Length: 427
Image (cartoon, rainbow, N blue to C red):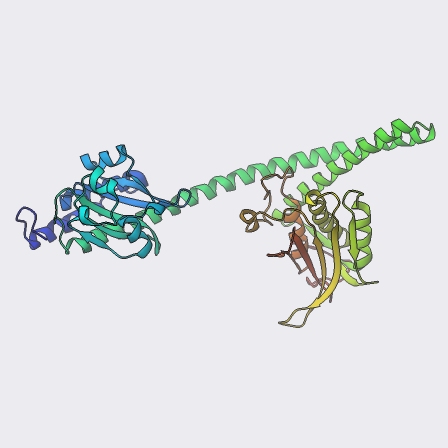
């Protein structure tokens, strides 16, 4: 291709080097502004009618011009909607993004794979397109366009590629800064929320104790005076207070975990019997709980903490299990293949809708909730931490046949945290 107004290769190289120096001088604090400035400098250096930085948008599966030169063709591109290129429509920009191979042409109007909106709507005749990488990953393309045929030379490719690499580094830095800012804001919100939750949980817990005492007196009086309707109302109020008490306990435990004040009191415990008792207290006529367990299975654990973890697993299962189905709880043992250590395993399975894929990666995080959840998202978090405190694990079956299946594993040889049964250990 020609020398563009008689400018020789040596002069072109000097001008392109000067452009790179100007790129490095850009104060890259705002990504959108920086991309526009980089495109404008590249357009001036090449004498191009338009330069774009197009990034792939996963939501729309399109290449979107996040940076464009301030030139007539650049403005027209946005005006006619050619700044968004769906991958499904094809075109040379999409081909370069997908293949990672650069492209150069001096007769775009004769290329059957080029989009008509590019050649007819914008009047592009010459184009040069290179991949745009961010942290080693293909994220888009960087391209220059001209309304003149045979405008770009082969030696323009290294220059455009160098600018593309610079844009990729700036984009990566901007994303890191943005993520750090998001993390800092999220951490700030969590700290404020933790303080508020801890204070409210403690104060409400103090108020619930006299309320439970007064309800107990009312219940005894209703029983003594044979007032059945009043007795039923009091029983319902007691059940509501008990649920609120459980919520306060979970909130306080969540705070204790963060401050290293969560304690275990490990004792030899008949695990199968503990599981049967817990299930019997929660089973309902609509969704019964079926227990499959050995006659006896002794483990050294904090029985109340294991009961708490199991209650949280069962509450989730009962909440999502369809009426007429059953929640299945299995107690078994297994040996790890690596070291031969034996484990006691409590599995809880339901036939509900299962865990949404987008929730699986943060399922055991604090305050993680599904789209239809009405809880605080503490149950699975606390259950997993109880398991970890005992040297065990809580896992989700990645591919159950139906519903969801959780497995709580505990060391069968006893909890070993440097203490003897009966001693408390903080985590």
